[in-house]
Length: 95
Image 1 (cartoon, helix red, strand yellow):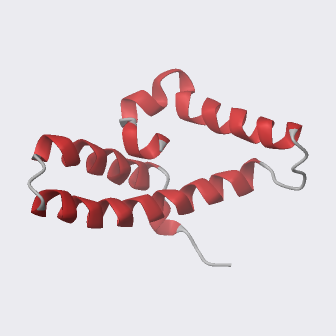
Image 2: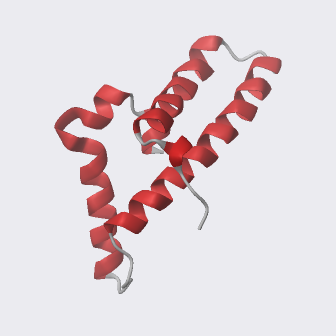
């Protein structure tokens, strides 16, 4: 959701996005998740951004077809598109 609702500026402000991801990882580790580090988290985050971009593309078509205003769907689509670019999601490889 960070990539969907925060603009680039909001994500970067005070390193907000990375602080949120580090906090999430810390909570996972506190609850016993081991063997899952920052690199895996960032890979999973990037995959989730790809998923959200595809979801938002379909959702945007749905919203527009059902009469939702552009001011409703465009900001979310813009946020996730910029996140996709910022995190080089096009460069993901399947392992």
